[in-house]
Length: 338
Image 1 (spheres, helix red, strand yellow):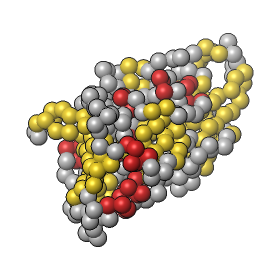
Image 2: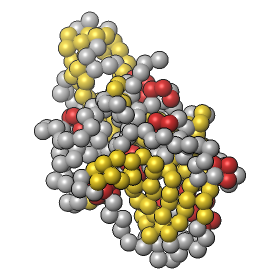
Image 3: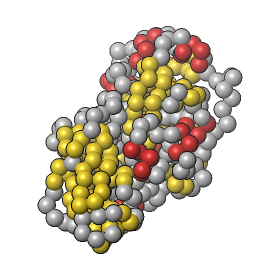
């Protein structure tokens, strides 16, 4: 099995060709952590749900399991995916395009747990805190925490997850319990979850303020990073590879705004043409695409560009912002044919 492309000690990306099938194998699933992997005792772990609720309580894993379980195939992407394609390259984890994977996640809907504690009418957000902890400026040592607006937390898609691809969560993916927020960038999906707190005012924690758009021409200044932007990737052939002159281009496309309407392909800056879309396996899974081409021997530049059902299309050049978030520029690869 091909391994993750290591970025640093806790962050590693997936080889793009492994996205041709879903779910992504666990030993190749991309990993991301701001502080590293905490040491959590699964036997003594409990989830506390408190704040502005009528019935604050704690849950063990067994109690959460007793609420019922369902599985969902979900595309998970880091907000910094594609940062290295910006010019100049912003500070942050130096992601190319491998900070994305597809998993089959099993757990209980978040709403089922929140309904049990009866949030008060004045609740506007829920704050999710993980066991991972580290030092940031200017706050000092803090736990990772992120918030969701109440309307989003109580929707039907967020899941409290204890299993991936039919296996118990591993430490690097948030064991024993993580939050999963489909269609939103990965910073929302808090791992090593320990506490959910209902609040009646905007949460101003470090990471909630960090994951915002600064200097992005397509967003209001300081707008929060949230829904995943539309993107297509070319998964085969690999960038820099040599192939025969007659070949099939394959890839995947996805969007947090809904389904994929089309994927256009371009060879050597000539006219764009449409790829064939395959079936989407699930509502949050990527859509596969393919197209057969015959090329003259030599070097070629291949590009792929997705458009979603909301008519959102990938930009031809990177849309820069200060923190390097959500860069969904058209994917281009260079290959040689013989």
